[in-house]
Length: 233
Image (cartoon, rainbow, N blue to C red; front, side, top):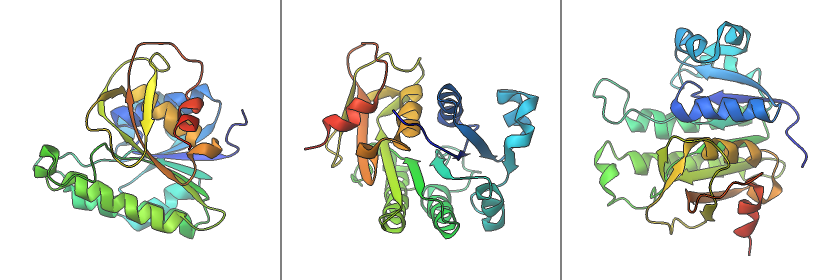
């Protein structure tokens, strides 16, 4: 399978899922640049050699986003508000406005491919998670803006809505992919979400679609690309 030709900007690279996105980009030998809030944390996670691949800033600052995007040919966005931290920006500032701002500025720059990691159950406002700053509703509004911006010809998006995130090695489970937010519950390894995000960049069956994904039985796989194809009617 053809890989991605260019540099991928990982937005939120020091988060637990973002860390795995970087690892999976490395495994596919895809060039990357990181947009992070803390250089010391990035250096702690990735080593001092990462310094030349860093832009430090906030998704609330358009100029800092533009500086990060100047290195990018594609974007994988992994950001999410810290909903249990009263001192953190609310989900409306990160999951909605932050995502929308990054997507708008990426398109302004002519970046053709954008992958967003969102969440299961974003279309269900009654979900218990939504009591935290309407976080699921804010994620859905961020998704909607990405879809609006990137539905034009020559652009493509992929939105991934994983179930509850756990930590484990990649490619060790069969996955269940669906569309339409019909999966009500489930878990998935962050590593597999990261792998799905990376291969979305160069898997035609992933383009301009929104997927829910969870894991099922423990079965090793050499690739996850066929799970995208299984959802095609």
